[in-house]
Amino acid sequence: MTKAELVKEIAGKTGIETNAVSTIVEAMMETIKDNMAQGNEVFLRGFGSFTLKKRAEKTARNITKNITMIVPAHNIPFFKPAPNLKEAVAATELK
Image 1 (cartoon, one colour):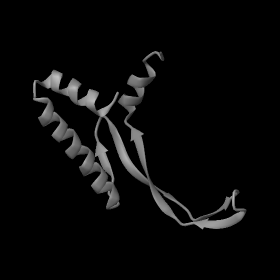
Image 2 (cartoon, one colour):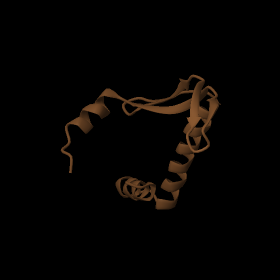
Image 3 (cartoon, helix red, strand yellow):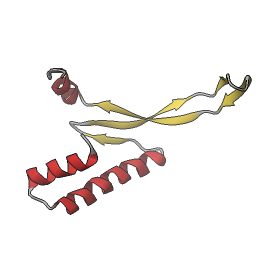
Image 4 (cartoon, one colour):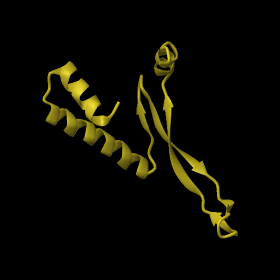
């Protein structure tokens, strides 16, 4: 499902105009991104949690240039689904 399909489905279920739903979805994604960029976690009860995982500094190799480099410590975004979301997904058949 794409963002456009999601907006269309929400608009159909709620009766709200597609443009308004699109604005809301964009604002939600922007808010989640901004909070995570500030180091905050976002918890959506019944859906899941958007958290940060810390990656330690490590040594890596660039095999094309045959050099070793240091990858600095950094954060990565991580989504942990809520238990009821896990159950709902596990109960569906794969296509």
